[in-house]
Length: 262
Ligand SMILES: NC(=O)c1ccc[n+]([C@@H]2O[C@H](COP(=O)([O-])OP(=O)(O)OC[C@H]3O[C@@H](n4cnc5c(N)ncnc54)[C@H](OP(=O)(O)O)[C@@H]3O)[C@@H](O)[C@H]2O)c1
Image (cartoon, rainbow, N blue to C red; front, side, top):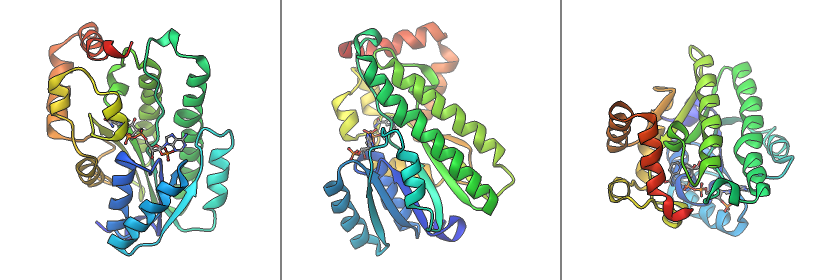
């Protein structure tokens, strides 16, 4: 599908420098959109912009921004106000590994500003704009941990659950309009962040996907599903987990996978 024809000229990827955000940015350009790349590392974003432009010929702009800044959402809204914005992709999601009470609380506050405050402000603004225009799309990246909880990364899973529930609710409210909202849920994906925090479980690691495959399969679901778990193996494993195990068993299974991060 040509996203530009359906949603508008510009896509913005919040957290585009590496991993799933980078792969999604390529996909948006391949699907006809010009793309704005947001992240903190200006030089890495500029190198990526050159790479995407060379492959796709699309216009790629770089907007360095720390999403944990108090007024990050307002700055991004101001910077894009004169553009034909078609698609917003919220990718960045900070995490903190370790026992809940041993992580400094200021880290959770920083996470809150990226994962909840800036996210929800942008969702609120752009869904309003898109509904008024009756055209546009918002894609949030979810995680299985938002559906299950995650010991030794508990605050991340809790904040992810917030992002996921909000996106799904808004997706339903946008049905029967030309505004498409998708919660694109990833399982283990081989990104620099995942490689640093791998679970101690061979099956989970064996099922890990490449970001490029996650992006292609996930973005094909935009306008088709409100909520979609990428990867057949992930879907089968998740289904088995929630049908065959109690909630206590699921929490314990996940806890064992991340005890080494305590
Ligand atoms: N990898 C997995 O296995 C997995 C599984 C399930 C769900 N997910 C979800 O998928 C998404 C992407 O994960 P990922 O592993 O590809 O990468 P990630 O480490 O979550 O995100 C990396 C991106 O976010 C940007 N970023 C981080 N903090 C930022 C900040 N304060 N302000 C602006 N940008 C910031 C980074 O760029 P800069 O460093 O340039 O700022 C980078 O582009 C996340 O929402 C994650 O929860 C991942």
